[in-house]
Length: 360
Image 1 (cartoon, rainbow, N blue to C red):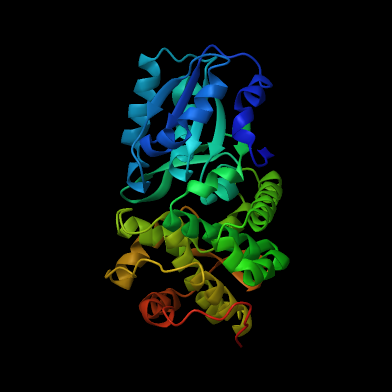
Image 2 (tube, one colour; image 1 turned 120 degrees about the vertical axis):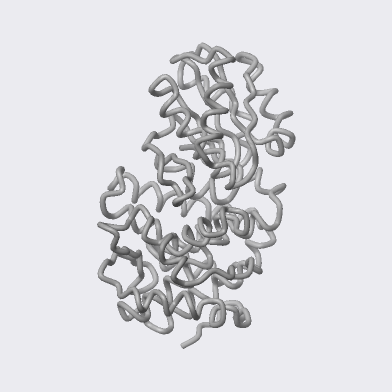
């Protein structure tokens, strides 16, 4: 893992440290390749001209059909077991390319170059890859760590506003589950972060990477501690699945999910009112979210039962007893969950709090 401004200019040198490869294969979306092609091609062409494999944009492309298209494109280009795949883009590209790398010829080398907030602080780290099924999110995948991850915060300057803001949900998550100081930093500096202040961005990206790496190193296969990284995701994944990945960006669904999880924690494990309101207030300051879908709570609950954390059909949630700590809880009453799903569209849409103000 390397993190620093201007790293894209050193792509060839860093890949060169990994050894020799028979061919290089870049996997990206048309939009990302259009923006980054000049700098990346200059660096990579010093070694060998890369093959370019373009995939569709957005969460709706994160499926087995896209995996097949990319794998067949690799086969037509002559990719072999000594080839290197380079995933350039956001979380969807990284997840698809990672799963392709894990399964093509039973495994080829992979480098991740994340270009969104979500990908830089979360999805590119830890080796989780996978795609969605109609029945739920991330139900098919593999643990497959990349040989190298290159994080260059400078690429976030051109990220669309909505995508940038939604990615901050994952950063807030790290503060909630593992670092009260990071959470307080976000409360005090959200306006600077939204303006993409370089110093503030560098701090939250590095700290998020540190937290993710620490958790993953202690639980590589998500058997316990790593589950805490899914705070807000049980609700969020249900929202994404129920709307067929067309209404929400991932971070937006997680933002709704974290606010729901804060309410559920208050109702189920006595999360203090101050902690609950601080989480909701900070999430609201990310910016406007897509409206809650007109889908029945019962239908959303069905999707939640497909969540990969569920055990024998019983729901399992990541909740926070206080900011800076989190754990996994089962035995949560479905009546309480349904109550949260019913009230979320009404009680989580109030005015955004003043910067740094805490509510009790």
